[in-house]
Length: 465
Image 1 (cartoon, rainbow, N blue to C red):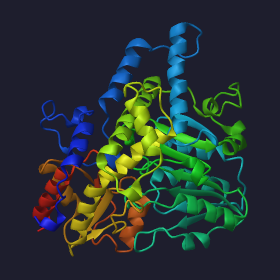
Image 2 (image 1 turned 90 degrees about the horizontal axis):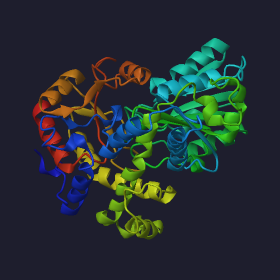
Image 3 (image 1 turned 135 degrees about the horizontal axis):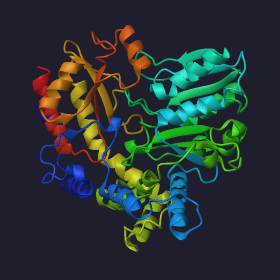
Image 4 (image 1 turned 90 degrees about the vertical axis):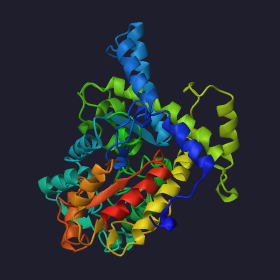
């Protein structure tokens, strides 16, 4: 193994990784000695113990219907209501909109697109980002086809970037929907969402264009901030962020109001209750309890920020306040939770992901026989550690199979970004791989350690000979 691509030792940082991993049953080597090294996080992350325990406790002690009037039913309702409030804080949506839960981002976006059937007319335009997962492409394409709308695609450039200049050529005063991926689950590039929304508003000249954002691949790595970005709709999956298999849709109050009469729940549900109006049928209540337990894990992450010895340039005024409050309370007390804690937790996440992302990007860039499918930089402002690549002569599936045998959980293929992979194959950017072969994707999170990446690099050295 080339020493230049090993992850440098940092005893203090290693201690943080080890403390955080103790919250996860998956990483207990004594209980799970044969589980693979988990680098398939873009497909779904591992759950900390408190999430599992909270769901189990709910099903043991509060497994009743909501709002029936008796005390136990009201306690169950309080869990679900608290989870809505928690997600609003998590997304920084408290002052600007509401959130609704669903079984998946795909289902929420499908339901959302159906709400617009009566709000578009022939001649209106829909723009779909070429980097989208099918969840935020298919529903809008279907809407355009059913209603006779003009359909446009904002394609990814040959360097795998999405530039605003090319988007600007597509926008017009008739653009009704712009559906984008905040981070592609293949490319890992972070769109500057605040800049994009400002650009769209200036070009179109009004807020008639609804900006619909798939944040599934962004949410595990950076703090969601819908208030700052100014988006109309934003969706992410909680099971990609250490939670249960559910998803959350944010909408501004104006966006929810516009589609009020078209939302999928029963006609007698009060129209001003946006969340209830969008949440068809019965929510996964035990899933809500699991999501609510993420408060505790975020508190642990925020508490670890001080341990990472931030450079002076990275210090934030709120850190001292966060630490004072955390030290003054029991971390198990999830009632003390606010936006500062969310931001502190994700600063920790970013710092923990930096060395692993840098090492793998550096190694892959050093190989003339490998093409990184996404940004070549390891800059955490521009990409997340969802890192895809192809080899000049080896099939993606053969590389993946070899890594499975060496003890890794990774993936190859199109990862439901079929249109993106198809376009890249047609352009010759994936060498001889086809859509089913796709790319090799290594997707890491903050709990993946430098030693795991060092071992991965040594294995890739053997595989890619």
